[in-house]
Image 1 (cartoon, helix red, strand yellow):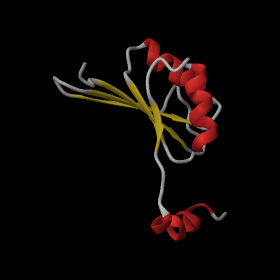
Image 2 (cartoon, helix red, strand yellow; image 1 turned 90 degrees about the vertical axis):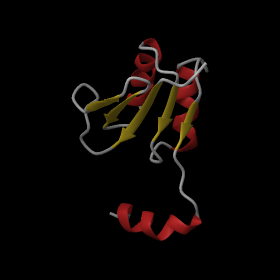
Image 3 (cartoon, helix red, strand yellow; image 1 turned 180 degrees about the horizontal axis):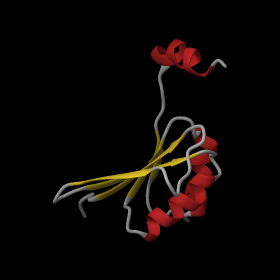
Image 4 (cartoon, one colour; image 1 turned 180 degrees about the vertical axis):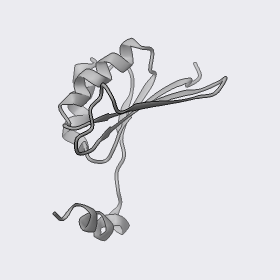
Length: 100
């Protein structure tokens, strides 16, 4: 089966999943991105994505392994869930972004 429906969940200050969402659609591929203000909101968002036919979910790096596992458990491992990660070459830049 080809990947045709991809979901991305991003966490950011004051993002509301009811409002902060977008889609990119071509004749062969659809990506839905939804923003959440708190990592816990990703659970319900992921469950809805699965119900909507999303085949693969990627979480932004702010979720980390703990929330990735919680999302996988919530959707009962029905589809793959991964998360963005940053290597050691990005540590200084990440620290500068999130030090406050």
